[in-house]
Amino acid sequence: MQKVKFSVVSYLNTLPFLYGIQNSSFLNDRIVIDLDIPSVCAQKLKDGTVDAGLVPVALLPQLPEYHIIADYCIGAVGDVKSVLLLSDVPLEEIETIMLDYQSRTSVTLVQVLANELWNINPQFVPASAGFEQQIAGKTAAVVIGDRTFPLLGKHTYTYDLAGEWEKLTKLPFVFAVWASNKPVNQDFIDDFNKALKLGLEHKAEAAKLGVGRGVPETDIVDYLENAISYEFDAAKKVGLHKFLKYLKKLP
Image (cartoon, rainbow, N blue to C red):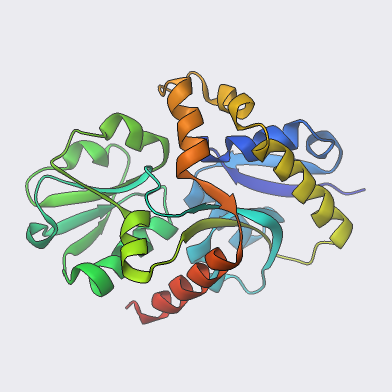
């Protein structure tokens, strides 16, 4: 049987998924995994380097074909704690927002929020490695993933983008879904869902996979238990549909 090639985001929030996959027969028998940042994961699926992945949802409209293959996602109901706009001035005084180079969905979400909720018109600038150190004055930045944890409390204003989305829409936000660029048989999907569910039932054990990344284990457990919402349920599907509609309005 030919193995399915996956690209998976290598952040703390995917640890339960990785735990479940590693503790099932999937990893060795049926799939091959590349660990990537979200923007690379998106590009690999787009150019066909991989067959499936945990895909930033902002990429979905750019794919010629996609199939959502799991009942689980990376989502949030309210604050997510790891997708932030950091600033030393309030929203109305921000002139420039640097956009995290590791992100596809979050840097689009901040533009939606600027237009639809905050009513601000800053300059959006693509950023490169080390940009977090350039937040100062009227220059703010979107920072995502594990790098947000050491930055908490370092700037006067912190806007959680998932929480801001909930203010705008009263809906949860979906950052990434499991998707393939070609059809996948139902037996594979059923077994894959079982593997993911196994990981979600062992979040405390999964958190141990993140030890050594500069975040205390107790904080990782709290993050996995209380900040990330993994079920791709009806409310999240509505939230995703609404976000994709907003994308169409962006220049």
